[in-house]
Image 1 (cartoon, rainbow, N blue to C red):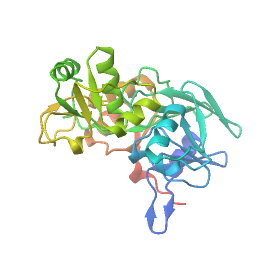
Image 2 (cartoon, rainbow, N blue to C red):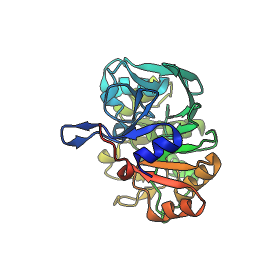
Image 3 (cartoon, one colour):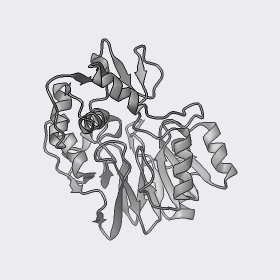
Amino acid sequence: MNSSQIALNFGFLPYREVFGERKKPHFSIRVDNLDFHIDSTPGTGFNLITHAHSDHYGQRNVENPRAIASDETAKILEVVSEKSFLGVRFKIGETIKVGDLKIKTFPTFHIYGASAFYFPKLDLLITGDVKSWKKLPKCKVLITEATYSHPSNVFEDEIELLLEKAEEGHCLGAYPIGKAQRVARILSNDGIEFCVDEKIAKICRALGIEVGSGGAKITSPSKLKKGYILTAQKYYKLPRIVISDHLDYRGLLEMIEHCKPEHVIFYHGKASKTLIEKLKERGITVSTLEDIDVFL
């Protein structure tokens, strides 16, 4: 389903912004003459920032007064950019208003501050990356991720193994924004002593997470020389403990079953042919970024 078909069937226009000869990241939607850019660089209109990871372009929007992000996301962005967030902040669960449009917010549990945006007028849900779908509402159109959409990506978090290796004092490689804070909270709740890199410590402090000065060390994967990488990715040479901030293939199907959309747009990560065909078998139409054919 292309842009004009989506506009005709669901009441909003999806389009790609262009800068010179290049397309801007992800895509945008036009609703009642208001433009919303989804995890993209600043544009005319409003930028919805689902969370603070760099590939969702929050850092590029720190000084954008029309950026919209949760309190926790804004705090993380302020730490990593060393600038004040000038956009609109909200607490996850609140309803915000842009013009005459109401937008409800829901947690996705991807990282601290990760938020979904729901437009009641359109019955449209934009999730960003998702770890848990259980708090998400039903919707007619679902705009979501496809990071682990191949059926080979089936996994469970190895929390017990993480606790075991942390108690033994091993170094643990975790992405500094998001996963490191989740792991810090897990270890803290279990009473396991740990320390962290300074960048990770600054983000933890901004979020009210206490860190210690000894024991296991949480560090960036790029700095890890020995120890364990905390990831569901399979390309690292060091030993791995499966700790993921995303849904796996089964989880994506469960989320879509829970939300019960008529149409799904995958905008981050490449949706597998298997997943797309599975949804079509269930009577759900699907679009990807390649189907969005309006460029403004």
